[in-house]
Length: 284
Length: 332
Image 1: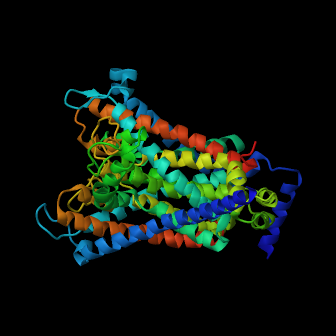
Image 2 (image 1 turned 60 degrees about the vertical axis):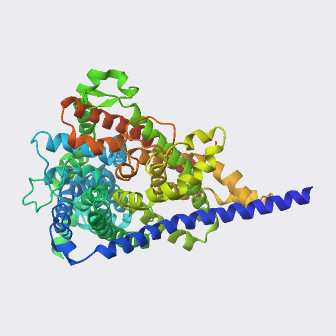
Image 3 (image 1 turned 45 degrees about the vertical axis):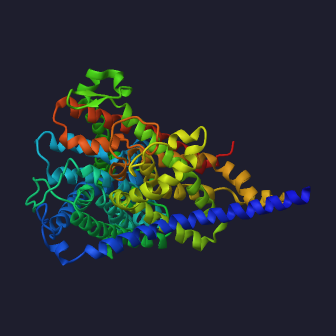
Protein backbone atom coordinates (compact mmCIF):
# COMPACT_ATOMS: atom_id res chain seq x y z
CA UNK A 1 0.00 0.00 0.00
CA UNK A 2 2.57 2.52 1.06
CA UNK A 3 4.85 1.36 -1.71
CA UNK A 4 2.14 2.01 -4.30
CA UNK A 5 1.51 5.34 -2.68
CA UNK A 6 5.17 6.24 -3.00
CA UNK A 7 5.25 5.29 -6.66
CA UNK A 8 2.13 7.37 -7.22
CA UNK A 9 3.68 10.38 -5.50
CA UNK A 10 6.88 10.05 -7.46
CA UNK A 11 5.14 9.74 -10.79
CA UNK A 12 2.84 12.67 -9.97
CA UNK A 13 5.97 14.63 -9.18
CA UNK A 14 7.60 13.73 -12.48
CA UNK A 15 4.47 14.40 -14.54
CA UNK A 16 3.65 17.77 -12.98
CA UNK A 17 7.22 19.04 -13.12
CA UNK A 18 7.50 18.02 -16.77
CA UNK A 19 4.22 19.80 -17.47
CA UNK A 20 5.49 23.07 -15.98
CA UNK A 21 8.51 22.88 -18.28
CA UNK A 22 6.30 22.13 -21.28
CA UNK A 23 4.15 25.18 -20.46
CA UNK A 24 7.18 27.46 -20.19
CA UNK A 25 8.61 26.34 -23.50
CA UNK A 26 5.21 26.41 -25.21
CA UNK A 27 4.73 30.04 -24.21
CA UNK A 28 8.22 31.03 -25.31
CA UNK A 29 7.67 29.29 -28.62
CA UNK A 30 4.68 31.58 -29.24
CA UNK A 31 7.15 34.46 -29.54
CA UNK A 32 9.04 32.59 -32.25
CA UNK A 33 5.79 31.59 -33.97
CA UNK A 34 4.76 35.26 -34.11
CA UNK A 35 8.16 36.27 -35.43
CA UNK A 36 8.18 33.43 -37.95
CA UNK A 37 4.72 34.23 -39.33
CA UNK A 38 5.51 37.92 -39.67
CA UNK A 39 8.87 37.34 -41.31
CA UNK A 40 7.33 34.80 -43.70
CA UNK A 41 4.22 36.80 -44.64
CA UNK A 42 5.68 40.27 -44.24
CA UNK A 43 8.96 39.44 -45.95
CA UNK A 44 7.07 38.37 -49.08
CA UNK A 45 5.37 41.75 -49.42
CA UNK A 46 8.09 44.03 -48.13
CA UNK A 47 9.82 45.98 -50.88
CA UNK A 48 11.42 49.34 -51.46
CA UNK A 49 8.07 50.89 -52.49
CA UNK A 50 6.73 50.19 -49.02
CA UNK A 51 9.16 52.70 -47.54
CA UNK A 52 9.00 55.34 -50.27
CA UNK A 53 5.52 55.42 -51.81
CA UNK A 54 2.13 56.68 -50.70
CA UNK A 55 -0.83 54.27 -50.44
CA UNK A 56 -2.58 53.66 -53.77
CA UNK A 57 -6.33 54.26 -54.12
CA UNK A 58 -8.62 51.29 -53.49
CA UNK A 59 -8.48 48.78 -56.34
CA UNK A 60 -4.96 49.58 -57.50
CA UNK A 61 -2.24 47.29 -56.28
CA UNK A 62 1.16 48.44 -55.10
CA UNK A 63 2.02 51.60 -53.28
CA UNK A 64 3.56 51.85 -49.84
CA UNK A 65 3.24 53.39 -46.42
CA UNK A 66 5.88 56.10 -46.46
CA UNK A 67 3.39 58.57 -44.98
CA UNK A 68 2.54 56.22 -42.12
CA UNK A 69 6.20 55.66 -41.26
CA UNK A 70 6.84 59.40 -41.16
CA UNK A 71 3.56 59.84 -39.29
CA UNK A 72 4.55 57.39 -36.58
CA UNK A 73 7.87 59.19 -36.20
CA UNK A 74 6.16 62.59 -35.91
CA UNK A 75 3.71 61.26 -33.33
CA UNK A 76 6.55 59.72 -31.33
CA UNK A 77 8.48 62.99 -31.45
CA UNK A 78 5.48 64.85 -30.06
CA UNK A 79 4.91 62.16 -27.43
CA UNK A 80 8.55 62.43 -26.38
CA UNK A 81 8.42 66.23 -26.18
CA UNK A 82 5.24 66.19 -24.10
CA UNK A 83 5.72 63.11 -21.96
CA UNK A 84 9.42 62.71 -21.24
CA UNK A 85 10.09 66.05 -19.45
CA UNK A 86 7.08 65.54 -17.17
CA UNK A 87 8.12 61.97 -16.43
CA UNK A 88 11.75 62.89 -15.81
CA UNK A 89 11.03 65.83 -13.49
CA UNK A 90 8.35 63.94 -11.57
CA UNK A 91 10.80 61.07 -11.18
CA UNK A 92 13.44 63.46 -9.82
CA UNK A 93 10.88 64.84 -7.40
CA UNK A 94 9.97 61.37 -6.13
CA UNK A 95 13.56 60.24 -5.76
CA UNK A 96 15.15 63.39 -4.38
CA UNK A 97 12.66 65.83 -2.89
CA UNK A 98 9.40 64.07 -2.16
CA UNK A 99 7.87 64.00 1.28
CA UNK A 100 6.10 60.91 2.47
CA UNK A 101 2.41 61.51 1.90
CA UNK A 102 2.57 63.50 -1.31
CA UNK A 103 5.07 61.06 -2.85
CA UNK A 104 2.74 58.22 -2.02
CA UNK A 105 -0.11 60.03 -3.76
CA UNK A 106 2.01 60.73 -6.84
CA UNK A 107 3.29 57.15 -7.03
CA UNK A 108 -0.20 55.76 -6.65
CA UNK A 109 -1.58 58.10 -9.31
CA UNK A 110 1.26 57.17 -11.67
CA UNK A 111 0.46 53.49 -11.29
CA UNK A 112 -3.20 54.26 -11.82
CA UNK A 113 -2.43 56.23 -14.98
CA UNK A 114 -0.26 53.35 -16.18
CA UNK A 115 -3.21 50.99 -15.80
CA UNK A 116 -5.77 53.14 -17.63
CA UNK A 117 -6.79 51.31 -20.83
CA UNK A 118 -5.29 53.01 -23.86
CA UNK A 119 -8.69 53.46 -25.45
CA UNK A 120 -9.78 55.55 -22.44
CA UNK A 121 -6.67 57.71 -22.87
CA UNK A 122 -7.90 58.14 -26.44
CA UNK A 123 -11.28 59.42 -25.22
CA UNK A 124 -9.52 61.83 -22.88
CA UNK A 125 -7.26 63.21 -25.62
CA UNK A 126 -10.29 63.44 -27.89
CA UNK A 127 -12.26 65.53 -25.43
CA UNK A 128 -9.30 67.85 -24.72
CA UNK A 129 -7.61 68.20 -28.10
CA UNK A 130 -10.15 67.23 -30.75
CA UNK A 131 -13.55 68.30 -29.45
CA UNK A 132 -12.66 72.01 -28.89
CA UNK A 133 -11.13 72.46 -32.37
CA UNK A 134 -13.53 70.03 -34.07
CA UNK A 135 -10.96 68.19 -36.20
CA UNK A 136 -8.47 65.35 -35.80
CA UNK A 137 -4.84 66.38 -35.64
CA UNK A 138 -1.28 65.19 -35.22
CA UNK A 139 -1.03 67.18 -32.01
CA UNK A 140 -3.99 65.34 -30.48
CA UNK A 141 -2.41 61.98 -31.33
CA UNK A 142 0.94 63.06 -29.90
CA UNK A 143 -0.81 64.27 -26.76
CA UNK A 144 -2.52 60.90 -26.25
CA UNK A 145 0.76 59.02 -26.68
CA UNK A 146 2.59 61.59 -24.52
CA UNK A 147 0.32 60.81 -21.57
CA UNK A 148 1.10 57.11 -21.95
CA UNK A 149 4.84 57.80 -21.92
CA UNK A 150 4.74 59.53 -18.52
CA UNK A 151 4.18 56.65 -16.06
CA UNK A 152 6.98 54.42 -17.36
CA UNK A 153 9.42 57.33 -17.47
CA UNK A 154 8.58 58.31 -13.89
CA UNK A 155 9.20 54.82 -12.57
CA UNK A 156 12.43 54.35 -14.54
CA UNK A 157 13.80 57.73 -13.46
CA UNK A 158 12.95 57.18 -9.82
CA UNK A 159 14.41 53.71 -9.73
CA UNK A 160 17.68 54.65 -11.42
CA UNK A 161 18.13 57.72 -9.23
CA UNK A 162 17.67 55.57 -6.14
CA UNK A 163 20.33 53.23 -7.45
CA UNK A 164 23.00 55.96 -7.54
CA UNK A 165 25.38 55.23 -4.63
CA UNK A 166 25.02 57.55 -1.63
CA UNK A 167 28.71 58.33 -1.43
CA UNK A 168 28.56 60.10 -4.80
CA UNK A 169 26.01 62.48 -3.32
CA UNK A 170 28.00 62.88 -0.14
CA UNK A 171 31.13 63.58 -2.15
CA UNK A 172 29.42 66.40 -4.02
CA UNK A 173 27.83 67.78 -0.86
CA UNK A 174 31.19 67.67 0.92
CA UNK A 175 32.63 69.88 -1.82
CA UNK A 176 29.98 72.41 -0.90
CA UNK A 177 27.58 71.82 -3.77
CA UNK A 178 23.98 72.62 -3.01
CA UNK A 179 21.37 69.88 -3.33
CA UNK A 180 20.09 70.75 -6.78
CA UNK A 181 23.68 71.20 -8.03
CA UNK A 182 24.50 67.73 -6.70
CA UNK A 183 21.47 66.31 -8.48
CA UNK A 184 22.06 68.13 -11.75
CA UNK A 185 25.80 67.58 -12.06
CA UNK A 186 26.45 64.32 -10.21
CA UNK A 187 23.36 62.20 -9.60
CA UNK A 188 21.52 62.66 -12.91
CA UNK A 189 24.60 62.06 -15.08
CA UNK A 190 25.40 58.94 -13.07
CA UNK A 191 21.89 57.62 -13.71
CA UNK A 192 21.53 58.97 -17.24
CA UNK A 193 22.24 55.71 -19.07
CA UNK A 194 19.48 53.89 -17.23
CA UNK A 195 17.04 56.77 -17.49
CA UNK A 196 17.57 57.12 -21.24
CA UNK A 197 17.04 53.38 -21.66
CA UNK A 198 13.80 53.61 -19.71
CA UNK A 199 12.66 56.50 -21.88
CA UNK A 200 13.42 54.57 -25.06
CA UNK A 201 11.46 51.60 -23.71
CA UNK A 202 8.45 53.79 -22.99
CA UNK A 203 8.59 55.19 -26.54
CA UNK A 204 8.86 51.66 -27.93
CA UNK A 205 5.74 50.77 -26.02
CA UNK A 206 3.62 53.63 -27.33
CA UNK A 207 4.99 53.17 -30.86
CA UNK A 208 2.74 50.13 -31.19
CA UNK A 209 -0.35 51.75 -29.68
CA UNK A 210 -3.35 51.88 -31.97
CA UNK A 211 -6.40 52.51 -29.83
CA UNK A 212 -5.53 56.04 -28.61
CA UNK A 213 -4.81 57.16 -32.18
CA UNK A 214 -8.07 56.01 -33.77
CA UNK A 215 -9.95 59.17 -32.87
CA UNK A 216 -7.16 61.63 -32.17
CA UNK A 217 -4.63 61.38 -35.02
CA UNK A 218 -7.17 59.44 -37.10
CA UNK A 219 -5.55 58.41 -40.37
CA UNK A 220 -4.61 59.89 -43.69
CA UNK A 221 -3.91 58.42 -47.10
CA UNK A 222 -1.66 61.31 -48.05
CA UNK A 223 1.21 63.24 -46.53
CA UNK A 224 0.21 65.33 -43.55
CA UNK A 225 2.13 68.60 -43.59
CA UNK A 226 2.38 70.56 -40.37
CA UNK A 227 0.93 69.38 -37.07
CA UNK A 228 -2.69 70.28 -37.41
CA UNK A 229 -4.08 67.65 -39.76
CA UNK A 230 -5.05 64.01 -39.40
CA UNK A 231 -2.01 61.80 -39.83
CA UNK A 232 -1.41 58.16 -40.70
CA UNK A 233 0.57 55.88 -38.41
CA UNK A 234 1.82 52.33 -38.83
CA UNK A 235 -0.40 50.68 -36.16
CA UNK A 236 -3.59 52.33 -37.44
CA UNK A 237 -2.67 51.39 -41.01
CA UNK A 238 -2.15 47.77 -39.97
CA UNK A 239 -5.58 47.79 -38.35
CA UNK A 240 -7.47 49.35 -41.28
CA UNK A 241 -5.63 47.24 -43.85
CA UNK A 242 -6.12 44.00 -41.94
CA UNK A 243 -9.89 44.37 -41.57
CA UNK A 244 -10.36 45.55 -45.17
CA UNK A 245 -11.52 42.96 -47.74
CA UNK A 246 -8.65 43.41 -50.24
CA UNK A 247 -5.85 40.87 -50.60
CA UNK A 248 -3.32 43.48 -51.59
CA UNK A 249 -4.07 45.45 -48.42
CA UNK A 250 -3.62 42.30 -46.36
CA UNK A 251 -0.18 41.84 -47.87
CA UNK A 252 0.72 45.40 -46.97
CA UNK A 253 -0.64 44.92 -43.44
CA UNK A 254 1.78 42.02 -42.99
CA UNK A 255 4.64 44.11 -44.30
CA UNK A 256 3.75 46.96 -41.95
CA UNK A 257 3.40 44.47 -39.09
CA UNK A 258 6.88 43.15 -39.77
CA UNK A 259 8.37 46.65 -39.80
CA UNK A 260 6.57 47.69 -36.61
CA UNK A 261 7.36 44.49 -34.73
CA UNK A 262 10.96 44.62 -35.90
CA UNK A 263 11.43 48.13 -34.58
CA UNK A 264 9.65 47.50 -31.29
CA UNK A 265 11.47 44.25 -30.58
CA UNK A 266 14.87 45.67 -31.53
CA UNK A 267 14.37 48.63 -29.19
CA UNK A 268 13.24 46.28 -26.42
CA UNK A 269 16.07 43.86 -27.03
CA UNK A 270 18.69 46.59 -26.82
CA UNK A 271 17.19 48.35 -23.81
CA UNK A 272 16.49 45.22 -21.82
CA UNK A 273 19.96 43.86 -22.51
CA UNK A 274 21.43 47.08 -21.11
CA UNK A 275 19.10 47.06 -18.09
CA UNK A 276 19.76 43.41 -17.48
CA UNK A 277 23.53 43.89 -17.41
CA UNK A 278 23.07 46.58 -14.79
CA UNK A 279 20.90 44.31 -12.71
CA UNK A 280 17.51 45.95 -13.30
CA UNK A 281 15.70 42.92 -14.58
CA UNK A 282 12.24 44.08 -13.66
CA UNK A 283 12.51 47.85 -13.46
CA UNK A 284 10.26 48.71 -16.37
CA UNK B 1 42.64 75.51 -5.99
CA UNK B 2 41.87 78.73 -4.21
CA UNK B 3 38.33 78.73 -5.58
CA UNK B 4 37.67 75.35 -4.02
CA UNK B 5 39.07 76.52 -0.74
CA UNK B 6 36.80 79.55 -0.57
CA UNK B 7 33.75 77.48 -1.48
CA UNK B 8 34.58 75.11 1.31
CA UNK B 9 35.09 78.00 3.71
CA UNK B 10 31.72 79.43 2.87
CA UNK B 11 30.07 76.06 2.98
CA UNK B 12 31.55 74.71 6.15
CA UNK B 13 29.95 76.84 8.87
CA UNK B 14 26.56 76.55 7.23
CA UNK B 15 26.32 72.85 7.93
CA UNK B 16 27.49 73.03 11.48
CA UNK B 17 24.33 74.10 13.26
CA UNK B 18 22.01 71.37 11.99
CA UNK B 19 19.78 71.69 8.93
CA UNK B 20 20.10 74.78 6.78
CA UNK B 21 17.50 77.47 7.02
CA UNK B 22 14.85 78.05 4.36
CA UNK B 23 16.57 81.25 3.19
CA UNK B 24 19.84 79.44 2.66
CA UNK B 25 18.17 76.69 0.73
CA UNK B 26 16.35 79.28 -1.35
CA UNK B 27 19.62 81.12 -2.11
CA UNK B 28 21.27 77.89 -3.22
CA UNK B 29 18.41 77.18 -5.59
CA UNK B 30 17.32 74.06 -3.76
CA UNK B 31 13.86 75.37 -3.01
CA UNK B 32 13.41 76.51 -6.60
CA UNK B 33 14.43 73.08 -7.91
CA UNK B 34 12.10 71.51 -5.37
CA UNK B 35 9.16 73.63 -6.51
CA UNK B 36 9.84 73.04 -10.21
CA UNK B 37 9.96 69.26 -9.86
CA UNK B 38 6.94 69.43 -7.59
CA UNK B 39 5.00 71.23 -10.32
CA UNK B 40 5.86 68.55 -12.85
CA UNK B 41 4.88 65.83 -10.40
CA UNK B 42 1.57 67.61 -9.85
CA UNK B 43 0.97 67.56 -13.62
CA UNK B 44 0.46 63.80 -13.24
CA UNK B 45 -2.19 64.42 -10.59
CA UNK B 46 -3.77 67.07 -12.79
CA UNK B 47 -3.87 64.80 -15.87
CA UNK B 48 -5.41 61.94 -13.94
CA UNK B 49 -8.06 64.05 -12.25
CA UNK B 50 -8.89 65.78 -15.54
CA UNK B 51 -9.25 62.37 -17.14
CA UNK B 52 -11.85 61.38 -14.57
CA UNK B 53 -13.53 64.79 -14.84
CA UNK B 54 -13.75 64.70 -18.64
CA UNK B 55 -15.18 61.18 -18.63
CA UNK B 56 -17.73 62.21 -16.02
CA UNK B 57 -18.79 65.50 -17.62
CA UNK B 58 -18.89 64.24 -21.20
CA UNK B 59 -21.00 61.25 -20.28
CA UNK B 60 -23.54 63.55 -18.63
CA UNK B 61 -26.17 63.33 -21.38
CA UNK B 62 -26.21 59.56 -21.34
CA UNK B 63 -26.21 59.32 -17.55
CA UNK B 64 -29.12 61.77 -17.31
CA UNK B 65 -31.10 59.97 -20.00
CA UNK B 66 -30.64 56.32 -18.99
CA UNK B 67 -29.55 56.41 -15.35
CA UNK B 68 -28.80 53.01 -13.85
CA UNK B 69 -30.85 51.29 -16.56
CA UNK B 70 -27.84 51.80 -18.80
CA UNK B 71 -26.19 48.81 -17.16
CA UNK B 72 -28.85 46.23 -17.81
CA UNK B 73 -30.47 47.47 -21.03
CA UNK B 74 -29.65 45.11 -23.87
CA UNK B 75 -30.51 47.30 -26.85
CA UNK B 76 -27.82 49.30 -28.62
CA UNK B 77 -29.67 51.26 -31.25
CA UNK B 78 -27.97 54.38 -32.62
CA UNK B 79 -30.84 55.09 -35.00
CA UNK B 80 -33.47 55.48 -32.30
CA UNK B 81 -30.96 56.79 -29.79
CA UNK B 82 -31.50 53.97 -27.34
CA UNK B 83 -28.36 52.77 -25.62
CA UNK B 84 -27.70 50.02 -23.11
CA UNK B 85 -24.35 48.68 -21.97
CA UNK B 86 -25.33 45.13 -21.01
CA UNK B 87 -24.04 43.31 -24.15
CA UNK B 88 -20.69 45.08 -23.91
CA UNK B 89 -20.23 44.51 -20.19
CA UNK B 90 -21.18 40.87 -20.73
CA UNK B 91 -18.72 40.51 -23.61
CA UNK B 92 -15.94 42.19 -21.68
CA UNK B 93 -16.44 40.01 -18.61
CA UNK B 94 -16.85 36.75 -20.56
CA UNK B 95 -13.75 37.24 -22.72
CA UNK B 96 -11.66 38.35 -19.74
CA UNK B 97 -12.74 35.49 -17.50
CA UNK B 98 -12.35 32.81 -20.17
CA UNK B 99 -8.93 34.20 -21.05
CA UNK B 100 -7.97 33.95 -17.36
CA UNK B 101 -9.18 30.34 -17.24
CA UNK B 102 -6.80 29.60 -20.11
CA UNK B 103 -3.90 31.81 -19.07
CA UNK B 104 -3.68 31.28 -15.29
CA UNK B 105 -2.81 27.55 -15.26
CA UNK B 106 -0.39 27.97 -18.16
CA UNK B 107 1.24 31.05 -16.70
CA UNK B 108 1.45 29.68 -13.18
CA UNK B 109 2.99 26.43 -14.41
CA UNK B 110 5.55 28.34 -16.44
CA UNK B 111 6.32 30.58 -13.45
CA UNK B 112 6.81 27.51 -11.23
CA UNK B 113 9.19 26.07 -13.78
CA UNK B 114 11.16 29.31 -13.96
CA UNK B 115 11.30 29.92 -10.21
CA UNK B 116 11.64 26.38 -8.85
CA UNK B 117 13.20 24.12 -11.45
CA UNK B 118 15.13 25.92 -14.14
CA UNK B 119 18.73 26.86 -13.44
CA UNK B 120 19.10 30.60 -12.90
CA UNK B 121 20.64 31.27 -16.32
CA UNK B 122 17.95 29.44 -18.25
CA UNK B 123 15.26 31.02 -16.09
CA UNK B 124 16.61 34.51 -16.77
CA UNK B 125 16.82 33.97 -20.52
CA UNK B 126 13.28 32.60 -20.70
CA UNK B 127 11.99 35.47 -18.55
CA UNK B 128 13.74 37.82 -20.97
CA UNK B 129 11.98 36.26 -23.96
CA UNK B 130 8.68 36.43 -22.13
CA UNK B 131 9.22 40.15 -21.50
CA UNK B 132 9.69 40.51 -25.26
CA UNK B 133 6.42 38.68 -25.80
CA UNK B 134 4.77 41.27 -23.55
CA UNK B 135 6.18 44.02 -25.74
CA UNK B 136 4.52 42.81 -28.95
CA UNK B 137 1.97 45.49 -29.93
CA UNK B 138 -1.66 44.57 -29.59
CA UNK B 139 -2.45 45.29 -33.22
CA UNK B 140 0.08 42.60 -34.22
CA UNK B 141 -1.82 40.09 -32.10
CA UNK B 142 -4.95 41.23 -33.89
CA UNK B 143 -3.32 40.72 -37.28
CA UNK B 144 -2.27 37.19 -36.37
CA UNK B 145 -5.68 36.64 -34.80
CA UNK B 146 -7.57 37.50 -37.99
CA UNK B 147 -5.39 35.57 -40.40
CA UNK B 148 -4.31 32.60 -38.30
CA UNK B 149 -6.37 32.02 -35.15
CA UNK B 150 -9.77 32.69 -36.77
CA UNK B 151 -9.31 30.20 -39.67
CA UNK B 152 -7.86 27.55 -37.33
CA UNK B 153 -10.78 28.11 -34.98
CA UNK B 154 -13.30 27.71 -37.79
CA UNK B 155 -11.82 24.60 -39.35
CA UNK B 156 -10.10 22.72 -36.53
CA UNK B 157 -10.41 23.80 -32.90
CA UNK B 158 -14.07 24.79 -33.09
CA UNK B 159 -15.41 21.50 -34.52
CA UNK B 160 -13.23 19.47 -32.13
CA UNK B 161 -14.57 21.37 -29.09
CA UNK B 162 -18.18 21.12 -30.30
CA UNK B 163 -17.84 17.35 -30.73
CA UNK B 164 -16.14 16.77 -27.39
CA UNK B 165 -16.94 19.31 -24.67
CA UNK B 166 -20.14 20.20 -26.48
CA UNK B 167 -21.61 16.87 -25.38
CA UNK B 168 -20.71 17.22 -21.71
CA UNK B 169 -23.89 17.91 -19.66
CA UNK B 170 -23.42 21.29 -17.96
CA UNK B 171 -20.39 22.91 -19.58
CA UNK B 172 -21.57 21.69 -22.99
CA UNK B 173 -24.08 24.47 -23.53
CA UNK B 174 -21.26 27.01 -23.81
CA UNK B 175 -19.77 25.01 -26.68
CA UNK B 176 -22.78 24.66 -28.96
CA UNK B 177 -24.17 26.52 -31.93
CA UNK B 178 -22.77 27.77 -35.20
CA UNK B 179 -19.05 28.36 -35.33
CA UNK B 180 -17.98 31.33 -37.46
CA UNK B 181 -14.39 31.46 -36.33
CA UNK B 182 -14.84 34.91 -34.81
CA UNK B 183 -16.43 35.18 -31.37
CA UNK B 184 -15.97 35.11 -27.60
CA UNK B 185 -13.69 32.06 -27.52
CA UNK B 186 -11.37 33.30 -30.27
CA UNK B 187 -11.06 36.67 -28.52
CA UNK B 188 -10.37 34.89 -25.22
CA UNK B 189 -7.62 32.76 -26.74
CA UNK B 190 -5.89 35.80 -28.24
CA UNK B 191 -6.31 37.66 -24.93
CA UNK B 192 -4.89 34.71 -23.01
CA UNK B 193 -1.72 34.81 -25.10
CA UNK B 194 -1.46 38.54 -24.47
CA UNK B 195 -1.84 38.41 -20.68
CA UNK B 196 0.16 35.26 -19.97
CA UNK B 197 3.50 37.17 -19.96
CA UNK B 198 2.24 39.42 -17.14
CA UNK B 199 1.13 36.47 -15.05
CA UNK B 200 4.47 34.73 -15.57
CA UNK B 201 6.77 37.63 -14.82
CA UNK B 202 4.93 38.84 -11.69
CA UNK B 203 4.32 35.31 -10.33
CA UNK B 204 7.94 34.37 -10.95
CA UNK B 205 9.15 37.38 -8.95
CA UNK B 206 6.75 36.54 -6.15
CA UNK B 207 7.77 32.86 -6.10
CA UNK B 208 11.42 33.86 -5.95
CA UNK B 209 10.75 35.82 -2.74
CA UNK B 210 9.54 32.69 -0.91
CA UNK B 211 12.28 31.87 1.65
CA UNK B 212 14.54 28.94 0.84
CA UNK B 213 13.93 27.41 4.27
CA UNK B 214 10.28 26.83 3.42
CA UNK B 215 11.24 24.55 0.53
CA UNK B 216 14.00 22.85 2.45
CA UNK B 217 11.75 22.14 5.39
CA UNK B 218 9.18 20.51 3.12
CA UNK B 219 11.82 18.43 1.32
CA UNK B 220 13.35 17.39 4.63
CA UNK B 221 9.96 16.08 5.72
CA UNK B 222 10.09 13.76 2.75
CA UNK B 223 7.90 15.73 0.36
CA UNK B 224 8.61 15.40 -3.34
CA UNK B 225 9.65 18.48 -5.27
CA UNK B 226 6.12 18.88 -6.63
CA UNK B 227 4.55 18.51 -3.17
CA UNK B 228 6.87 21.14 -1.73
CA UNK B 229 5.90 23.48 -4.58
CA UNK B 230 2.18 22.78 -4.53
CA UNK B 231 1.61 22.55 -0.79
CA UNK B 232 4.20 24.97 0.59
CA UNK B 233 5.60 27.44 -1.94
CA UNK B 234 2.40 28.32 -3.81
CA UNK B 235 0.29 28.77 -0.66
CA UNK B 236 3.04 31.01 0.75
CA UNK B 237 2.98 33.16 -2.41
CA UNK B 238 -0.75 33.01 -3.03
CA UNK B 239 -1.48 36.66 -2.25
CA UNK B 240 1.12 37.84 -4.74
CA UNK B 241 -0.10 35.36 -7.32
CA UNK B 242 -3.63 36.71 -6.87
CA UNK B 243 -2.16 40.15 -7.43
CA UNK B 244 -0.61 39.06 -10.72
CA UNK B 245 -3.95 37.60 -11.78
CA UNK B 246 -5.80 40.84 -11.02
CA UNK B 247 -3.17 42.76 -12.95
CA UNK B 248 -3.67 40.45 -15.91
CA UNK B 249 -7.45 40.76 -15.59
CA UNK B 250 -7.19 44.56 -15.68
CA UNK B 251 -5.12 44.26 -18.87
CA UNK B 252 -7.63 41.90 -20.41
CA UNK B 253 -10.59 44.17 -19.65
CA UNK B 254 -9.01 47.17 -21.33
CA UNK B 255 -7.44 45.39 -24.27
CA UNK B 256 -8.83 46.89 -27.45
CA UNK B 257 -7.33 46.21 -30.84
CA UNK B 258 -6.74 42.46 -30.81
CA UNK B 259 -10.23 41.84 -29.40
CA UNK B 260 -11.92 44.22 -31.84
CA UNK B 261 -10.36 42.34 -34.72
CA UNK B 262 -11.51 38.85 -33.73
CA UNK B 263 -14.68 39.07 -31.60
CA UNK B 264 -17.15 39.60 -34.43
CA UNK B 265 -18.55 42.92 -33.19
CA UNK B 266 -22.18 42.02 -32.61
CA UNK B 267 -23.89 43.59 -29.57
CA UNK B 268 -25.84 40.53 -28.40
CA UNK B 269 -25.74 38.49 -25.22
CA UNK B 270 -25.32 34.86 -26.25
CA UNK B 271 -24.59 31.77 -24.25
CA UNK B 272 -22.37 30.04 -26.79
CA UNK B 273 -18.69 30.90 -26.68
CA UNK B 274 -18.57 30.45 -30.46
CA UNK B 275 -21.06 33.27 -30.99
CA UNK B 276 -19.84 36.69 -32.06
CA UNK B 277 -19.99 39.35 -29.36
CA UNK B 278 -18.71 42.78 -28.50
CA UNK B 279 -16.66 44.34 -25.71
CA UNK B 280 -16.65 47.83 -24.21
CA UNK B 281 -13.24 48.70 -25.62
CA UNK B 282 -14.14 47.30 -29.03
CA UNK B 283 -17.36 49.28 -29.39
CA UNK B 284 -15.56 52.49 -28.45
CA UNK B 285 -12.83 51.78 -31.00
CA UNK B 286 -15.32 50.97 -33.75
CA UNK B 287 -18.05 53.52 -33.28
CA UNK B 288 -16.44 56.57 -31.70
CA UNK B 289 -15.55 58.31 -34.96
CA UNK B 290 -18.95 57.47 -36.43
CA UNK B 291 -20.98 58.64 -33.46
CA UNK B 292 -23.12 61.34 -34.99
CA UNK B 293 -25.53 62.34 -32.23
CA UNK B 294 -24.51 63.91 -28.93
CA UNK B 295 -26.32 61.21 -26.98
CA UNK B 296 -24.55 58.49 -28.98
CA UNK B 297 -21.14 59.98 -28.22
CA UNK B 298 -22.09 60.48 -24.60
CA UNK B 299 -23.15 56.83 -24.27
CA UNK B 300 -19.80 55.72 -25.69
CA UNK B 301 -17.96 57.96 -23.23
CA UNK B 302 -20.01 56.52 -20.39
CA UNK B 303 -18.83 53.07 -21.53
CA UNK B 304 -15.30 54.46 -21.29
CA UNK B 305 -16.06 55.60 -17.75
CA UNK B 306 -17.31 52.12 -16.82
CA UNK B 307 -14.15 50.56 -18.26
CA UNK B 308 -11.99 53.06 -16.39
CA UNK B 309 -13.67 52.28 -13.07
CA UNK B 310 -13.35 48.52 -13.60
CA UNK B 311 -9.61 48.69 -14.29
CA UNK B 312 -9.12 51.28 -11.53
CA UNK B 313 -10.55 48.97 -8.88
CA UNK B 314 -8.69 45.90 -10.14
CA UNK B 315 -5.34 47.69 -10.39
CA UNK B 316 -5.75 49.05 -6.87
CA UNK B 317 -6.49 45.59 -5.48
CA UNK B 318 -3.61 44.03 -7.42
CA UNK B 319 -1.13 46.57 -6.10
CA UNK B 320 -2.20 46.08 -2.51
CA UNK B 321 -1.86 42.29 -2.83
CA UNK B 322 1.55 42.39 -4.49
CA UNK B 323 2.95 44.90 -2.01
CA UNK B 324 1.58 42.81 0.86
CA UNK B 325 3.38 39.67 -0.33
CA UNK B 326 6.65 41.34 -1.16
CA UNK B 327 6.77 43.00 2.26
CA UNK B 328 6.21 40.10 4.58
CA UNK B 329 5.19 37.02 2.66
CA UNK B 330 1.55 36.28 2.03
CA UNK B 331 1.47 33.67 4.72
CA UNK B 332 -0.81 34.51 7.64
